[in-house]
Image (cartoon, rainbow, N blue to C red):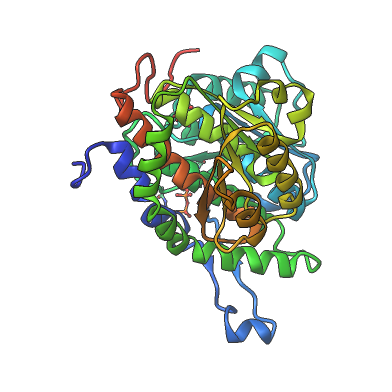
Amino acid sequence: MKGGYDHYMQKEIHEQPESIFQTMRGRVSRMGAGADAAAGGERCIKLGGLAEHVEAMRSGRRIMFVACGTSYHATLAARQTVEDLVSIPVACELASDLLDRRCPIFRDDTCVFVSQSGETADTLAALEYAKARGALCVGITNTVGSAIARSTHCGVHINAGCEIGVASTKAYTSQIAVITMMALALSEDSISKRDKRNAIIDGLAELPEKIRQALKLDLEMRRLAGTLEGEQSLLVFGRGYNYATALEAALKVKEVALMHSEGILAGEMKHGPLALVDDTMPILAIATKDSMHPKMLSVIQQLLARGANLLVVCNEGDDDLEELCGSPDKRCSLIRVPQVVDCLQPIVNIVPLQLLSYHLTCLRGHNVDQPRNLAKAVTVN
Ligand code: UD1
Ligand code: F6R
């Protein structure tokens, strides 16, 4: 069952080159890629479950994603891509909070419910709430025939394969890919977005190989987990596309390794979190190359100046970071991941961090696949 792996979580992390491929199979076509692209060839995205509803989504007043936990983080990771390509206001809501606030929802809203299990009680209750207000309700689920898949007007199955470990891993990367594909499908008539769309579609096609390369960091992540084993806490800084990566890495560390961990928007660092930083505080920073890179370099400089013990996720061949963190007097380890188009980088970046939380859990002697107090599908509010 575990195919030679010790735990389902480990198996599911390592399955990601294949699961992301399955998510895209039959949906991403690059007939115009390569030589043809120069001649103006087009790539295209086909999401059968949405085909009849694309027009209604495009003409809606906003797109609201609704989810819990890791699925919510996937919506945050892909939000900017939807905003960039579709140019419709996008909101990401935690299902429980949406219900607590009795958030206003209108007939011309599209509400997208993202759930691995398709059975999460809060997400399902939010779906019934949105349906009652006349919104178009779209599902993004991993489970065919689940309550959310049945109750939505239309949707997309992420086809990541059965996920058994309580900590969600491969569903997360596939959810980001599907929301990105949804943004591509909604923007296919946009001439101004054509180059960006083509770059993203090419990036999607590269993902299985890039994830395969990131998985080679396994041994290195086990070594780094050893440096964190006895720590009380881990702060994780990210911004832009990778704010979600920071939140998701911290969630993985807290739920399976049972270590306090907090994902922090790096732009908020000076508004409180910096007070926690000294030479006893381990910090993980995500600083891969995108438009936020100069700002992340500055954050890292400020953290180093306070003696922080740093792990930095960066792209291979990032000379600025090699220079900043490379000297032996700095307590800084670089986690070098392959580069992909900026909006897909969170899919690659989370892989070594999933491995880190996995190894940390094993070293600390906790139950990997069934962390205490947690269930795979939360079917009660
Ligand atoms: C579908 C088939 C797939 C087949 C392909 C061929 C299923 C489950 N999928 O995939 O086996 O190879 O056509 O073209 O039979 N839906 C919801 N809510 C959700 C998720 C999905 O309503 O949360 C609906 C969709 O709108 C669609 C149906 O379920 O009507 C199947 O969705 P999906 O599997 O994503 O569609 P295809 O990728 O076209
Ligand atoms: C974290 C985790 C949970 C789920 C959350 C939503 O690893 O598994 O945070 O993501 O309970 O579950 P689904 O996606 O099934 O709605």
